[in-house]
Length: 313
View 1 (cartoon, rainbow, N blue to C red):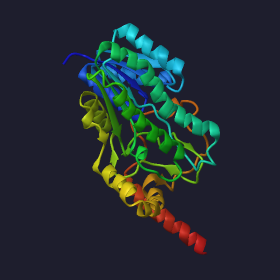
View 2 (cartoon, rainbow, N blue to C red; view 1 turned 90 degrees about the vertical axis):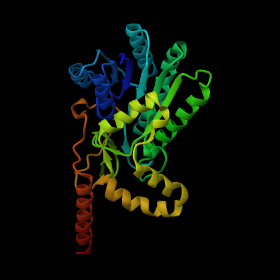
View 3 (cartoon, rainbow, N blue to C red; view 1 turned 45 degrees about the vertical axis):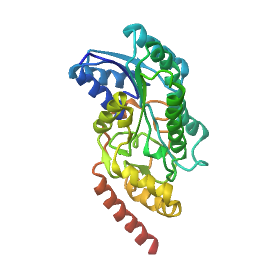
View 4 (spheres, rainbow, N blue to C red; view 1 turned 30 degrees about the horizontal axis):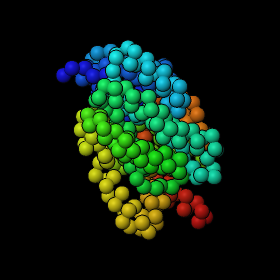
């Protein structure tokens, strides 16, 4: 296989890091984007050891259009082309709309949605000039449903899904351009621990939890065959079915189920913006520290029991 030029945003942690590592094993040229240089350098060193043809570290905030423009221009200047572009930069905020500070809410949209627009704005001219290439944007199951206390993330990921569809319509005149979309459910990454939190509990990946490597494999498969993207596991389809077909039942159940499966009721709540407004590189990693999801659910059940007993006294 000849090496490709693969550009990955959000490459310093989680799915983005896993995508970079998988591309490195293939022997590709890597262009790694994220806000923090130190975390990117760590990933680049790992990718070099895994067999990457070359690694290029480009600190950039995808919510800043000029940052993205400069990063894409530097990649093209060095390599002359782009073959695969993966948009995975993302941040999370927990809390009701009225409780999340406006700057935090807007920053989630700026990174997850506007950052993806900035990315495609600058890579599309390159790909259209080449006449071929792939863009894969990493969305979420939450881009298809609604869940409690995650309005900013929900809105950003619904918008991202529309962006992918629009790209396919607008670029039909370039049939060799491919636009992939992958929607993970729960994934074992640090994004939940790094989230902005303005509620009464912290988030965790809901069952069933996939590894970032498994999602990364689907991302790179979608780069070659966009139809291989979409939902990353069967559970996503079940949840989407309930949301679309049985909305009264879904709306009644989603609150208590979200509390049990997608929150950590034992972990101490640290109110604040997390990594939404600025990078917290010390917490960037390939995987999170949540532990087994089923064990987490069992602990949540026990914690709810303790709280009920305390209220009854």
